[in-house]
Image (cartoon, rainbow, N blue to C red; front, side, top):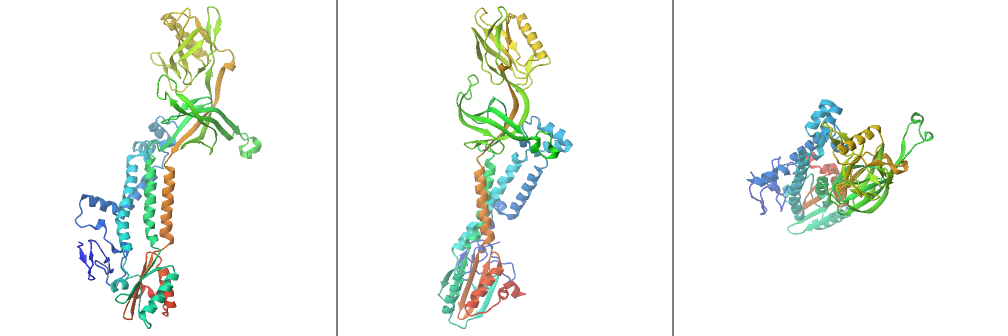
Length: 561
């Protein structure tokens, strides 16, 4: 158990100090007395070494442990690897029943995979919790070490204890034959040529400290800062306003709201071009290979009545762009990518006529869109109010009208017709725009049931005169909608981390201490990496001052063997 220790030099050191803050004399050392010192953090006291820690200190000690950090990283990597066994749910478009999909596609293992929640690994609480714990560990590990290290390096003493010098990685002792002050000045000039900063203490004999590349000691902590920024940016992607990755499918002429935004997008026109046989290799001739598929899109922003269930939203166009693969529509951080297309004939709109069968007069036409139809229409002197809409008409078990889905696969519209010669409440009619024998039969049967209930007199019918009054879509375009406001911060974090790695890997913090007692010279040198390099520099500087020595002879560990 560490106690407050007063060094023989008279300096009072705090609990946990390994090397005296003033002279460097070892205070607590379990190694043999002639072995090199452990110079990590320059022997400064750290909070994780606090005596009698309380609850907060125990939490601090847990997260300041490098072993704990390594285990957290290993567990996170294992969890991330498990998330790659099968595709994540977020990679699918319109996956209505994930459990059934994983069971049907991957069998029993897929069912287990989904049951354990691994199909949503990167959005799960435990995975996000691991990232938070890694970030916490990075912060506490850095603070526990960088603050004491900064204090130790910013207050270095030039004159060091003989025991400190003799137990460095690089050590040399000799007796000077020349004047000590003159030799120290010459030795200092040689070190300055190697870009060392030099301090000389002439009190009580000569002492010298030379140092270079101290900034490299901060490389690991700058790397930690970059990783913390990176992790915070990754966690910020869980905030809806910061990240979105969704899909919108649009028929030609269709307009849809982009989920969770005030924006709407319209597919003005979709174009697809295919390679000709002359452009394809022999084995692909006769096949359809898309050369280009493009959505001419217009982006709108809602300015009024955005959430009004009765009124149509007021939309203002803000940007138009021909979206192609790798050429998205971009607007204020929102990006729409061309993801896919599907060849599917869909009815977009019709322009029917209201026919009065009593006098064979026709009124109209009026435009009837299949999606988001207006609530009222004018046909001559008559007003048609939309009472009900069945986008994908069907009958339930009690033969009651219902819709199978929200997609306009087989739309049916119920109108209330009011006008001259009609009762105050008007007459009710159902209209199926898609021409088929089954739809014609259903339309007649339902209108007949309305007539029997007294809801209509059978006076009106709907007709479409010519295909020029029918609008079809041949292709459905799927756009990938992305918002990633965290990505710039991810790049910033990666750049900061890379700067820290470069600082730590390509430069070494080198220090040389010496003291002369009478004419007895004692030199010690330390570096956090590349001990051969500092031995070569010391040997070269000694050689230029008239002391010839081989670099290998300066290796303290070699000399002890």
